[in-house]
Image (cartoon, rainbow, N blue to C red; front, side):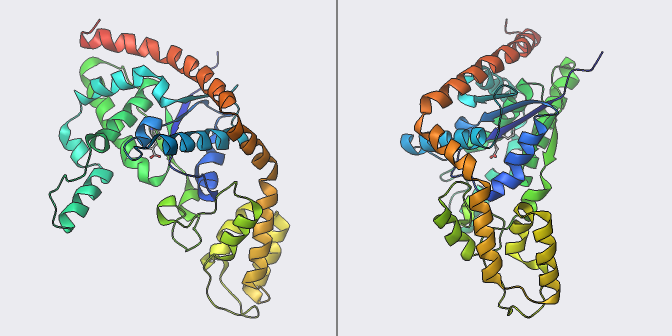
Length: 333
Ligand code: TRP
């Protein structure tokens, strides 16, 4: 008999227009993974609530990410695709975990520590402006992960600590109460580390340096033309590994074109404006069919809702057995 397929789970925080860095670092690898794992991908709308307090903004971001993933090939027949907020069990589990998690573990979480540090640097009280949601964020994430018995959690480097916190809580719970929780492993996308934004720093909406996937071709061109390069002339040889344009180009151009450009980098004959034009064209063409699907989905929120509701149904039925077992274990039944 075949062993049951392992579970891959990830949360997508709806925080802004998905960009090329998200695509290479997260979306494409996660969609590929869904062929080999039982995949649970969800929109972490309640995580986004730590940041967004405005209805229209949060709604727009939710539908943008849902439409992006669906347009880029997430197959809801194969992936359990849902909204976090539809699964009441997640919040029940969050509370239970909070009663087992040492508070000190949360004091050490990066996002919270950074907020405290910033306050202290500015001479303010340590916790000023920090809501308890930000503090408890890692617990909500641990609940997302543990509720479905996830084995593998594809995330960016910045989320790795949250998986470690999840493992800590789960293993100390298991230690006392038997094997209730599966210990998850983080899968950190290598690509995400090397996709630069137009200013050369990691592509991130926080730096305002992104190339959005589905902007119209002229907007994409504008961003691509702004990518920072050195000022070498076309004749001079250049190091492709130091070039922010090439770092994106190599993921999208056909292999022969990449080879040709590599040769020109190394031996002279490459004009930055020229490869930028080509990159802008390739990006626009590459995502053209998906852009149409994306736009159609944005116009039809009811269709997106139906997909997510169906996913929530499946997710809940999978969450219930673990919750019953857990409640019995802790004495709430
Ligand atoms: N915190 C993650 C982020 O900021 C999103 C997220 C929420 C998540 N719950 C999760 C990721 C569970 C992986 C597993 O991107």
